[in-house]
Amino acid sequence: MKGKIIKIEADWVLPVTSPPIKDCAIIVEDDVITNVREKGDLSKFPCDEIIDCSGKILMPGLINAHAHLELTGFKGKIKRGLSFTDWAREVVSMRSAINETEITSAIENGLNELISSGVTAIGDFSQTGITVSLLNEKGLRGTVFLEFAGFNPELKDQRMKELKEKIPQSPPLVKGGRGGFVKFGIAPHAPYSVSKELLKESCKFAKKKGLPIAIHISEMSEEIELMKNGSGSMKDLLIDFGVWDDEWKVPYSTPVSYLDGLGILKGTTGIHLNIVTDDDIRILKENGVSVVYCPGSNRWFGRNWKYPLREFLNNHINVALGTDSLASNECLNMFYEMRIVKENFSDIDNNTLLKMATINGAKAIGFEGETGEIAVGRKADIIGVDVKESSIADPVEYVINRAERVSFIVVDGEIIIMGKPPALLGDSQSLTITGI
Image (cartoon, rainbow, N blue to C red):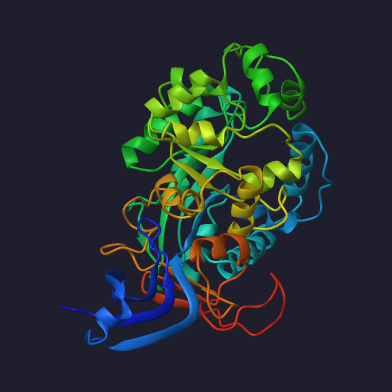
C-alpha cells in the first residue's frame, strides 16, 4: 500500500553522487526518495502535497561523523594552547563536576546547533547513552558510540559489564516516534587508554552484535611517543589518573600497527589519524578503515602539521568529517569544517569535499546505502540552503563558501525545520524547529 507522496521543488538539487540539477523536483514516498528530475519532467506527477523550496539549494543532510555532545557545555571554558594531556586533565576534572541533568541539557543544546546548521545524522561518542533518546525525540538519525576507557587489564570485566548493560537486548536499530533512526556502536577510547585485553573483547562483542566500532587513533604526538617508546607526558597522565599498568608492554609501533596486530581494525572507523606513516596508510586501506578528519579541532589545538588528506584520498580511503566537541572547537557547524578543509587544501575539489560531509560520513557511522545522497531508494534526509543571489552558476561552490544555516530539513520523510534561518548560530530570530 502506497503512503503519502510529497513533491519538493527547488532552484537547485545537489545529489552529491551525480551532477547538480537546476529547477529540480524530488519525489518522496513516506520516508524514501522515489524520483529526482527536472521540475518540467515531473509537472504532472501525482502527489498529495507540493513543498515549494524556491530560492533554495536542496542537498542531502550533512553528516557529522564525530562529536562528543556531552561536552557541549564546556565551550569557552578551557583555554587554548594547552598540550593535549593538560587539556585532558581539564576535561576530566570538569566532567566529574557535572550531573546527569547538566549532561542532558548539554546534549540537547548541541543537537539544536547541529539541526540549525543542517546536520541530519551524527556519530556521537557518549559515556552515558543519553543521546539515544534525545536523537529519537528530535527525529534525527545517528549512531551513539558508547565510549569507555580501561588501560589497566584489571578493569576489563567491569567495563564489559557496564557496556553490555547499556546495549539493549533488542536489535540495535531503533525507530523513533518521529521517524529518526538511532543505532548503537562501541567506542573503546584509544590505544593509549584501553588495554589490549579490553580492546579485543569489546570489539569481538561488537562484531557479534553487528555494532559499528570507532576508535580515536594517532591523534597527537604524545600518543605516538607512548606507543613507540613507552614514555612521555601520556604515561604521566595515566599515572596521575591512577590507571597505569606496570606490566604493560611497550608495542614499539605506531598506534595503527598496534591495533592491526590485535586484529581489530577490519571495518573500523578511525577518528583523527593526524599522524600516520606510509605503512599505516597501507594498513588502513587493507582493512577498509574509514577515517574521520576533525579540521576545526586541529585548528583549535594549534596543530600545524599537514593533515594526510591527500594521501588518504589517493589511496581511496573513505574520509568523513567531524566537529569533535566544543571543549576543543568553536562550533558544531559542518559548513565551517568544510571551509577549513578548503583553506588547508585549496586543490581538493568541491565535489570531493561535499562527499566528505555527506555520503562518506554515512559510511563511517554505519548508514552506508541509506543516506548521504539524493538518489532513488535512499532515505529522504534533505536540507535546504537559502540562495541570496538572484542566480548562481555553481551551487556546490555556493554551499561550501557561503552557507551557514539551513531553512529546511526533512529527516526520514518528516519535516524538522521549515522557516527563515537566523543569520547567526545561537540568535533568537524566528525559526520553526519541531520536536524540540
